[in-house]
Image (cartoon, rainbow, N blue to C red; front, top):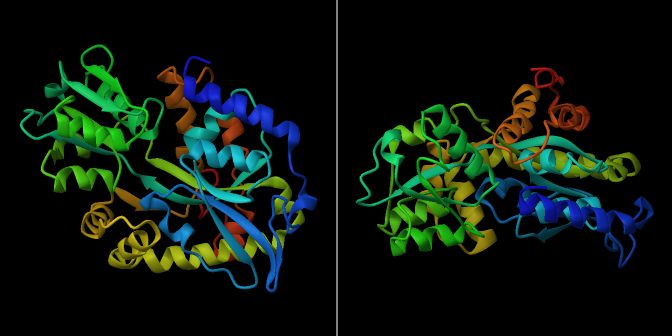
Length: 342
């Protein structure tokens, strides 16, 4: 494939699916499900330490031993799900859309978790206040990420081409963006909270209201959902339900209290960014979302195809992996209310 991060993901999954841990490994010491505990088998759930996934990382499920497994990226979590070493994890819709171009992983989205998540930050003194000001500027992000896609698509929508009218600077990781901005190597970045808040608090970056207001123009607002392995859902429905019920309870609790959300994230990660996280939640830079809006999710691979990030539109395959059954059961809402067919 033309984009190296997608190629690496495909190779990793292809290699690992040859040694898939079977459903019988769930709950057995040394296998994908972990050891049998006093309150039942261990369910291994993955997460990337992102602020938007705080309710997932802090859930407490009755009758289930939950082991939280950290990963560096959604792609890493997705690979672990495909090879059976974890049972559930938040994953970006864009990551699954890319994987589906070449693979048929046995996985299903069982809930939404977040929307939005992209924040544009200009270097202080760069003179960027409008979309037109982006022409001739050096703009950095991580190619293929949701933040890259949102910015590139929005720029097209506003008559500016990220790769022709500006100079795109590709970074290997999001933490590198703030350093580049601080050094003056770039004029702007497309990133996510709390890194965006750190750039502003540090004095090197500023928000640009006009650009932020249009960050999703022509693009998608949906970001990620809770992904689960098919065999886990089929063979251990009670455990899956307990975990998802605990997640939705925690989700509603933290969504109603931005300060508690921020404190919980800081406690999980040691990152003292409570003020900027509260601000990001209130401005909906991070937008909690349990619903899985099928129409919006179908638009993700369409946008990726248009930008030549993936080689074909996998909208039908992605929509086919939206399973509303469990979320409907734990919330008491119908599949239609949760976004099916919308």
